[in-house]
Image (cartoon, rainbow, N blue to C red):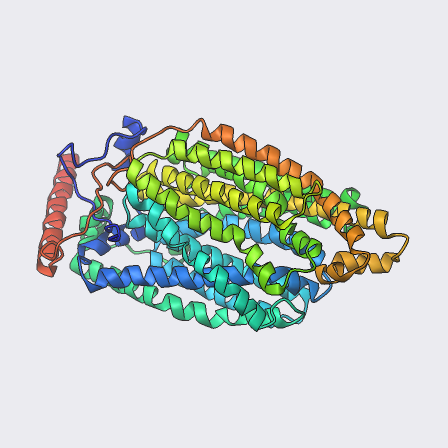
Length: 629
């Protein structure tokens, strides 16, 4: 199968070549030309005025594939290390707190990375993310205490989020709607391969031990930078070449006009004016408000067990109050005062809002159980080897990535997404129902594995369909921001669920351990069992330990099952549209195709750019003359 062609916007008057009209209103389409397209979007569109068929295009795809593979290898191994890194310091219980912190940071980082990629460039955002990723992994690998582990995870979460987000943006930049789901799924396919490799790596470095996890983090501080370098270099080179040839003026009329104006009247900005310029366009105040507001609202749920008096502690009450005030302030700022808001109203069409609801509820139901699910399974299955346990923890990842390929192919050949999306949501409800059997006593290997497979199948179909629908409902200039908004709310949904899960876990597990082990274990011994899954797995009588943890987990599984039904209701409210060869359903003239060598000839591109700029110069001079008279 040939790879889908890269982005090459062109205007066509042939109705058979244009995609069918979308749900977007005429008003929305009319405003597309008025949107000030960011430099990052302009550079990526201009890239294909200098990239035609040949080695440059092949190298770009190879670079994206290399990023996907190494990133997947990292995720397939290090995702299981958090429980052992915290257990090494006797602090396994803060896994939930870490999940909340990293979830909030990942969510808030989404619009920041998207705005950075739009405002400056895709390779710049990728480079900044790489630095954070590497520093964070080094911090965790060399951590002398639990505080450094938490800080390192916070830093590398920002880097991980950036790498993943820019990779997704690049794929969406250069593929048509009909291929978007398949190619996005293909970049996740290495997770399937690496899931089988991960077990050998984990076992080979003894990662599931007091210090083996350090090697697991440290090796990727070297592998990931080396793997990302080709993509960063080729993107920077392509952007420089496009600017040199004047292809930026061909890619965006808003850029071309701004460029001509700057030639006629060169701007003189002081350093402070430049700082203000980027602060406003990144919506720095909005990012700070939403970050601190959710930190204040969610952190108390994980801190109440360690704070004196629980929720009655004045510090936790203050956090909740401040968090609520900041969240209200964020909404007021975004919808009343921000000139470049994180969530502009123009992207809030019906399909996009439904996609937000679907993914928010999907992540919410999933994270109610996922924060402690692997720990629970590790405890209740003491006969599983480290390799088999790692295979199981990757079952969900393999299913999500593997089934997403089939979902992408169905989208490609049916050119529709809604029925497929609803099918995925129904499968997810079925999978959650089977998972509920496990906390009701049926803990057979078949039930545990099948529930993960069916949930992953439904999740793969749901996420792929929602991704394509949300991206297709907005113009290219808003695409990265729309992706970030969707991810922001879904990750916040996961963070809220993680906070609830941590609060329930911290309260229910000690309570049930006391209920079943008070006669045989002292309070200090029970605290050790609660503080380390390694200790809990080895503690006898194991059937009572199993019973304590399972009963503590029961309510979270029931809630996850109920919430998954609400996601299905949101799916029924989306609007269907055609998935064709256009980049999106708003700008149907932006058709995605590979340019021939004659179209990317340097002299041809330079001449066309000069013609566009000359025409704009005449128009601007005529406008000024008209105003002066």
